[in-house]
Image (cartoon, rainbow, N blue to C red; front, side):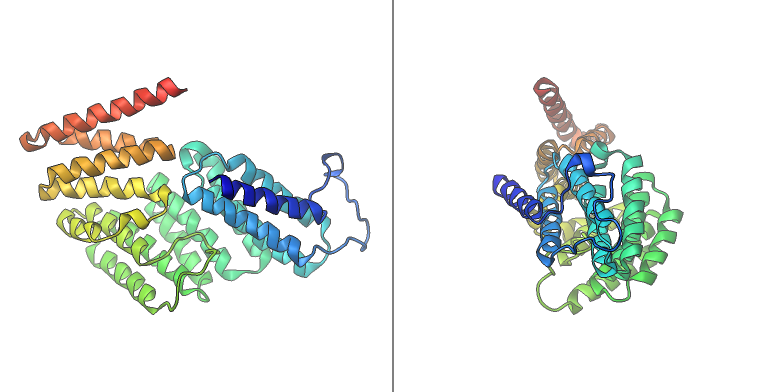
Length: 341
């Protein structure tokens, strides 16, 4: 993690050396009136992109302390836009701004707040439109759809937004694959088995059609891959009540290869599926792992979900020891967190 921070600081140093970051006392003044503003160099643009990429790496590793740096990075790009007159470079800066805003929007909701997450996402859509990048516009709309699905369970709004995202995504098959698995999740919450299976199959066919390794850095921040489709599908089957099918799929998936910020929820789903198929020891192992990761990643909502799961199975004779163990472990983690404050 320290090496990543050093890389970010080095990239910042490169931009400062290129004269992109202004002094605060001139931030609101146009230092280059008329048509004499100097063009940003290609290296400066590459450095801005590199910083966004490094922030995304830290985010996927569960670093929850990057938001202030991210917002500062966004301000730097906005200032560069203010200083730049050339249309070609401005379009590239708009693209970089949209990507930085999306990374900030993907910060944990409990840290960011739902209102700020929506604001950042809507700003990313506007920036992507200004850049002229259709696929990035579709991705930004898709992320907003996912936000409405995950945080508000507004299936109608999420579906409408995904339809718009689909219209913008024609040039990117991996983006279309990601949209397909989000659509599958919506169908699962609607109880529509057939539609859910169609979208999962569609996403898997797209994964199979992609040649070569996943593009790095991922310009749309979807982490679309065979593994992500499997994890989404497992969650869909759990939502539809097909725990046995979810258990078979999730236990065959290398969960440890997921980014750190996604592993806790995957282990929580494994715990849920394990309970239904009668694998009580496995359920406890996955529940404890989910809570350990949630504590490390500051994803307290996962701990609350594990507690709710434990309370829901307390009445089952075979599950009583599991429920008690999960409740005690969750309370231990919560006390440890309070004592550390």
